[in-house]
Picture 1: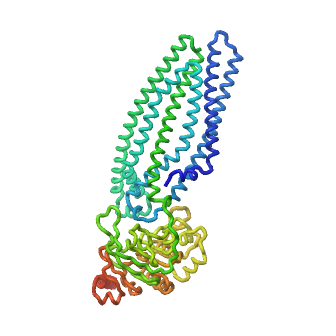
Picture 2: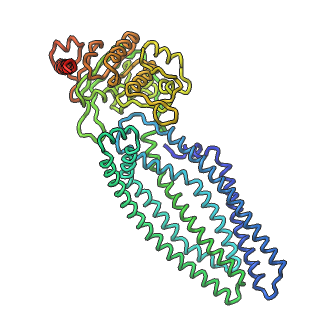
Picture 3: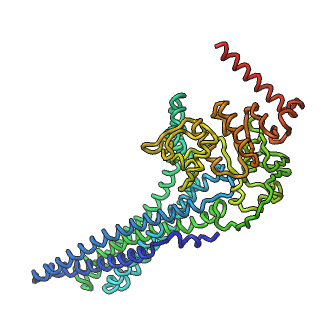
Amino acid sequence: MKFNLLKKEIHHNSWRLYVTILVLGLLTALLSTSQIEVTKHLTDTLVSNSINSQQVVLWMGLLFSVYIGMNLIKVINTYFQDKVRIQMSFNLDTIFLNKINPQAITNVETPKYQNELNIAKYGFDSISGLTLSFLQFVSLLFSITFYFVVIFQKIWFLPFIILLLNLPKLLTESKLAVKDYQFVEQTTEVSRKRSILQSLLLTPLAIKEILIFSAKPFILNHWDQSYREEIIQTLKYKRHESVKKLILGLQSNLGLLLNQSVLVFALMNKIISFGDYISLLAAITMIESSFYGVASYYRQIKQYHISTKKLVDFFGKYSNIGIESKDSVSIRSKDLSIQNLNFQYPNQKFKTLNGIHLNIKSGEKISIVGSNGSGKSTLSKIIAGLHDIEAQTVFIGGIDIKLLDSTSYFSNFSMVTQDFMKYPFTLKENISLSDKPNIEKILSIKRTYSNLIPDIDLNTVLGYEYEGSRQLSGGQWQKVALARALYKDCEFMILDEATSALDPESEFKFINTYIQEERRKNLIFITHRLNLCKLFDRIIVMDNGRIVEVGTHHQLMNSRGTYYNLYQSQKMEEEYNGLVQTTI
């Protein structure tokens, strides 16, 4: 991916503003130079043997006009800079959110991704300030150039001395720009940890457990340790930076002393007038100040160039830029086949799935069961195309899914996972995930699946994030997630512990209704409630990342294997719980 592909989007509708700011910068430089010239003439008039009051009033009037002009331009320039900053921030956020489009969740669900994302955000922040930094950099160069012209006319060699004395500023800031990025890379983990712990203390979902378990001191202690570690690293870096800045300051002071010595020598030898001395001293002081600004902006520009490579790498991993588009293939059959599938999560020592072979016929309803950690959820996500896998392992309609466009493949699946999303949108938007929801379709789902969609206004905003919104219970939220899955209306429905928050009667009713209503569609149901498995065409039993049994409920009970043991264990538990409840 070439980063210059994004330049047009970054600077969209901003070029006129850039030109305006540059013109204002040029006018500011001209007025600053005029201020020096007017100050020189006013001073010479005041120290002359015969003071001309009319000339004094004239020069003071001109100086006052220059001040007004500079102040007016400053206000206008600040407004346009704010406008650029706002526009740039919007453009960059739009680009960032649109371009971050992982093709799978395998690498996204890792600390490495979070750290790289943090560094990428820092890179985008440096780009955000780059344009204004560059414009201000150019504006300061205008000012320095005009000041040099003024000084050159009086003492021709002095501008070259000033330039040589200020070169170390640029070199130092260039080195610090590299150090800045290294510092961000080194501290991003601890910074992110501190931020996560802080959000835990403020998030309503976490506050419930914090209150019940009196966990605030425990979490605060971890937050305090992370913050202190971050502070130690930051102060260490700032000390290093301060030493560099101190050396620069001493060099600058020596430079000012040298420049002033040249001016004093010129004044004593009648080369310049007292007015020239005052104006040139002011010009040199402003040049020194401008060079500090130039060096600072140069540092930001240097940071941008360092950030670019990291951003290119990040977008190459996690965006749709540079990814070769795949042709949409017409899939006639919806049969799904898995052949010798192995899967291992990044940074994990052991395989989560090992040698999986499975065929699912079009319209088949299957249930996947097994103990915790047996690989059920991972397998369901792979079937849905959410994990990056090797080629020639998963096929749909006889076609390797690695050859298919991911968007086209996703269109075949609807899914509800254990950690489904609770969106801060209206009820109808939560179900449709669309700006233009099909209300009749939502009402049809409500009629078919009674008590699934909460009996509230479809325009009600859900959650606790906004004023006037309405929070739902865990079971109600899960029903909304199920309604969302039904709304998509596709060939494969995957439910991963998606009915666990429902009461047994509602759960049975939902599954049975879906099986009866959607006979041509596939249902992959992951559950620990084995009494529901009788409803399914086949049951897949998993253990330790492998499929150990396949069959109907009747077949597996007769074989008296893993499924039989799980079923009997659960049955005994239910009978015991029922006996306890009856006794109570």
